[in-house]
Length: 299
View 1 (cartoon, rainbow, N blue to C red):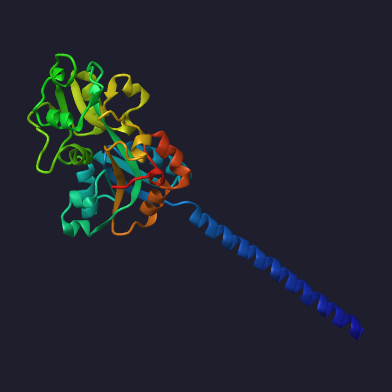
View 2 (cartoon, one colour; view 1 turned 90 degrees about the vertical axis):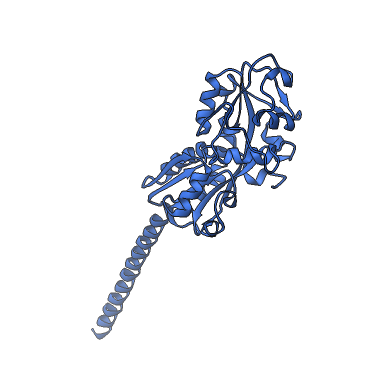
């Protein structure tokens, strides 16, 4: 009898131990699932503003990011690189998109407040309306047109047609990149000729409606439906292509930056990382941008 009691006690202890192990496994699985769920997606709302040249990529990436993270909202605005840099340094937006380095627009104190995230490279093209017959310009001719020294297309090998210059405002990073590429130090575009448009999209629309036009646009805007009405001009015989930019043959390009005030954290960090990720590389290339890893030259 005593032996049977001992056996029953041992069996009860064993059952209790096994039950405890199952309970422990259940709690562990629950904890792991909770941890996994907490890191699988991010949430919240942020605003990115600035470069209209970068805007198509930011907008598409934001839409794709939200599909993966339904509780996250990325508000995307334009305004130009200068606006984006000023707003992020002031803390009024979470991300400042820019075609240029912060030091080109901000004072030293504000530059120290922001952190640069170079997300890709973008090419730009000097473009003309379809009626213009000129397909190649030298850098000197581009300079002379935008400073007002050349005012008729016949003076650069085209037909007798007045040149209509479409400028970008001084806050534009695209304009700053144009100046760095084509204009000597101390020489500026002549804003008294032609018109000024405040975004890449507005430049495109203005050129579609005005004959004899010349301007410059990010290559991300030169989609098939645009290039049927707008010509991309060669510069010194070199075409505006990503391959020529990657090899250093074509000079009109810049890095695309996403600045944050201090180190990127939370949703802003997750979104910037996503834009630069391998998951997003196909979108970067499809929209006409160049992954930084593809560049064989630097600036």
